[in-house]
Image 1 (cartoon, rainbow, N blue to C red):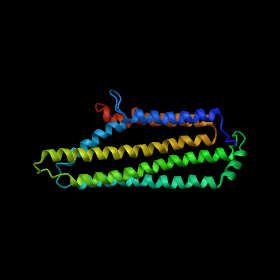
Image 2 (image 1 turned 180 degrees about the vertical axis):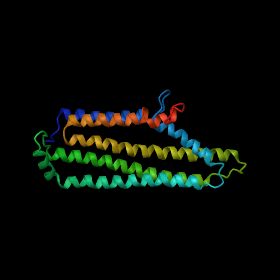
Image 3 (image 1 turned 30 degrees about the vertical axis):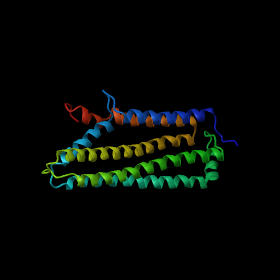
Image 4 (image 1 turned 180 degrees about the horizontal axis):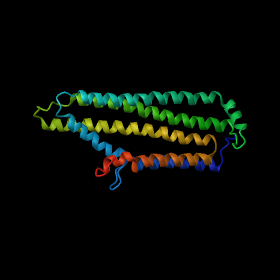
Length: 232
């Protein structure tokens, strides 16, 4: 079977996977001297739980938790819509291939090549859905742990410490899976370049990688947390 893939396609796909794995490593694993925005925000998740404990009325904490859940639910539903739209492309392979054949500077893919590309895109959106759905569930667990945290008049200091640790750790894990789902969305946009050409695929992958790296390590949001002596 002619899949319509050449060496350049394989190189571009390996480059795409390598960029995803490399970004995962640098964004999620703490390193001295250059923490990512996500890593720094984890410290504030812990600080949130520390500030939550003395409050007798924790309405503000439940409101924040509900906001996090709503945002996660939105992305989960969006990934399902994107997944359904992607699978629809499989039913219209011939039509889309004929559209590409009419474009002078694009080499039309074979039907097998087109379907493999579409399936790969569907896998990315499915991965994003599972990450967002699991993150939603974990934020729900975090809300339960906030409700289970003892009141400030409790004398059991060990249980208080453990409760705050559980709540903050659950919040960090929920945020980590949410970030991975968003990361899949960004790389899905890069993946679209493969439908045009493997060269464009590598360009869009590099551009997406740079955009995400800049947001994590060189953005104005990062400076808000690390350059307190400067005006925003």
